[in-house]
Length: 138
Image (tube, rainbow, N blue to C red; front, side):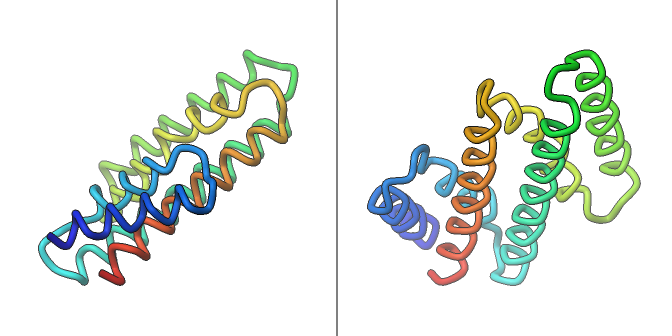
């Protein structure tokens, strides 16, 4: 009941604010719901911090390699490999998982214009935070 209510509220807030893709907020609610509030809050914070790191690296790489695809792909693959390595060697494996896999997706979701990429990264971070805050409040 808690997860359903939090998901409905997250979708409602996302849609009422006119945000594109409010399913990201619902996804954050669904993936952060655990048995206890403390575990859910911890996982939510790891998700927010991982999304922030993924967005920051995504924008940094777009700024550093705007025209050099091969160097961008090499650095992206290196970052994803580092995150994969850290998943196996850290107690915060969920943080590294969230930092690694959405980073290339956030970079490509914006299209060819940097302003769209920035908007996509900010929107993803806002909706992830909305989902975690909504689930915590409910």
